[in-house]
Image (cartoon, rainbow, N blue to C red; front, side, top):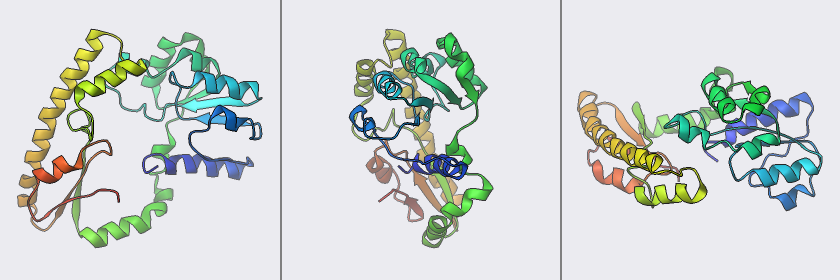
Length: 247
């Protein structure tokens, strides 16, 4: 919800101002669709989990549109294309794409879908535009009052510091759901996880240096939600370093 809600709400508000009635929710199952009015079914992904739901929604008289909400950053072109299900794309009327690069990869994976792809960006970035910053003003002021002047360090090291799975378990899970299917793909992710190990060590080393250079600033390390926060807490013992976690 923290990562996705505001962007979805922005789209909902624009649609409502245009004249649409909007139902914003998560995890709509096929049985629930039977009781909803017909309209535009807007989903956040076109992966292998979507085709049956999309097919059912279309049979009920809905139009399907979608984007790939997590598709801005990817580790390799091949792994990104695994996110796109041709069967799901067959049901989609319009696909709103992050950028030209993603549009190229999707068109290469599903040539018949090229005419459906619209390069629009994503509301997760739009919500950061100046005219919408007031949405976050109250929470931003609370953090400023709590920490004073601070540096914010965001991290994303789930491959080397996942909160409950080892890297081998992560790879086995991706095999199970079909995201990776070859030895080369698995080996690539193992090598990437070791790269993350090295990157995280540099981040840990950077923070006390930064703290000594700016003694009047609080250093806030904000791990990715999938990371193990306990590991970060054990790494830092300096009084001026805070770990920002969502309660």
